[in-house]
Each structure stands twice: as structure tokens, then as C-alpha cells.
Length: 55
Image 1 (cartoon, one colour):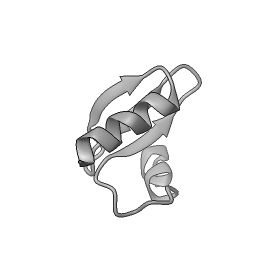
Image 2: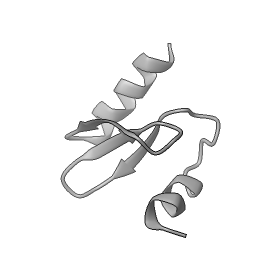
Image 3: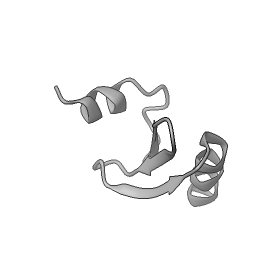
């Protein structure tokens, strides 16, 4: 199992189509296929982006 698969399986909200991967310098939003959608400087901004997309 690669790191991306491990991180995606370890996330708490499995029903989300967009998920987060947190790195030291940025938080990346990925889609259900693992494609990078956007990178945000903070986790809060990434969460806000996801909320806006899911509305």
C-alpha cells in the first residue's frame, strides 16, 4: 500500500468526495481519485474550500 492510499483510508469522513492531505508547508485537497485539486497554506482554508464545494 502506498502512502497516498494509506492516508486516504485513514481519513475519518469516508463519504466526502474531497479529502485533505496535510503536509508541513501546505494542505492539499484531493478528489476521490487522488487527483490534486488545490493546495492551501492552512488546514482551515482547505476545510473552507471543501465546505464551499460541497454546498
